[in-house]
Length: 106
Image 1 (tube, rainbow, N blue to C red):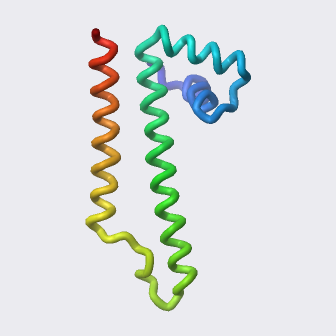
Image 2 (cartoon, one colour):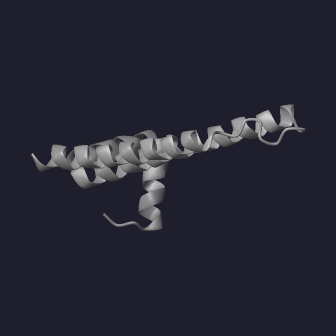
Image 3 (cartoon, rainbow, N blue to C red):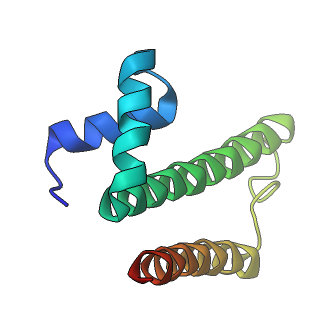
């Protein structure tokens, strides 16, 4: 699959619901007939989910700091938790990719 801007914007529009109903339906139909496109959309969806998780963690940390400005370490995740979260995200990504490849080979 190409990784040009228009292609990425189309996938992003599909995932965020910004496409018209007819474009959404056309994209779904294209995904049903193209395993490569379906895999690209699944990976982009996973990127969105991981990004949202990272942003949420950052906001929780900032809120905790605002509640207790005297203690800058309040709300900071422990290093083990940060590493665990990253490994979980990478593992999920790899499982999705492997699953998509196995599914579409058959």
